[in-house]
Image (tube, rainbow, N blue to C red; front, side):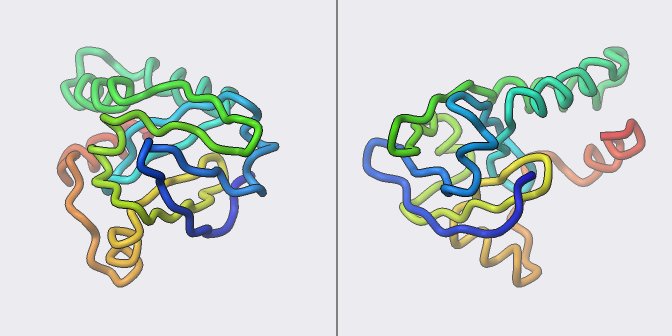
Length: 146
């Protein structure tokens, strides 16, 4: 289970250290993908499979299902931690999340989220950053159980 909030940095090569408390749970390989509010979602292999199965069970005839699937899976990548707990965040994901040097890793029970520090502070202050998935789609996905 992922809990807590941890401040970290992304180095010039796009690598960051995963919080020590999350490393055992994640194992050596895990999945990073685009999340809501321009953060990144981090899943263990088991949780990724659960999320993948849930999304794949949605009706493909529903435009919202297709749009969400494209968003979610097009940004996904399997990454590996090195012996020091570092991993490379793929460039497209760093761009999507508008990462600068400082990030915050947040535990959200079944996943971790990685936020640009400034965006996290704005979110916590009630000024949510713009999301690439509009509110109407988010409501549609809620109707479908996502």
